[in-house]
Amino acid sequence: MFRLMNNRKNIMIEPEVSITLSISNKDDDGEYKRSFYTLDLERKNIMYLPTIWTVVHIIDSESPLFKYTDAKISELDAEIYILAQYHEESFSQKVYQMYSYNFSDIKVDHKFIPSFSINESGYVVLDHKLLNKTEPI
Image 1 (spheres, rainbow, N blue to C red):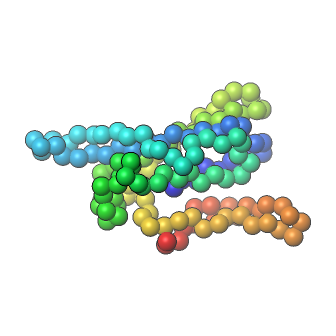
Image 2: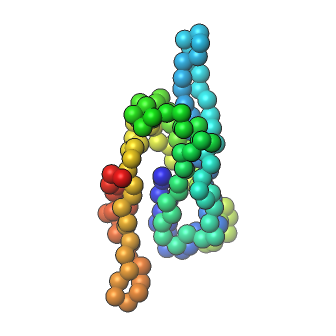
Image 3: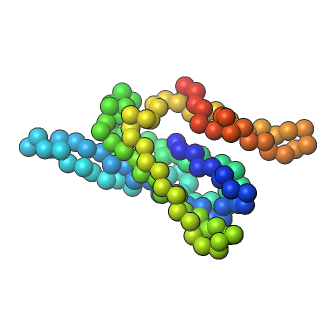
């Protein structure tokens, strides 16, 4: 899971995310080879993003991570590359944001805790201190 946050005053129009997984493994000759996979996402785009979006890749039989145990995933020589793009209305152009995470930074069997609530007036309140907080599943 990855959280994309809109930290601008206006709404991100038609945000879209693509995630590439890169894994290094030794081949039969003992040489390292890098393999690249495009991860299927629960949802790769949404109509607009007023606050936050949790991007989810489900590890099922189609996932390149399916053959690894939780312990092995933590030990993989791997990296995730994330490209987020959206239409920025104040500039009237497409904007790109890139992120990368080494697998040593990834928490296995964790989920994000809710980072927003609804106040007495019915407005959504986002707590920025909770955006990257996780808890064990």
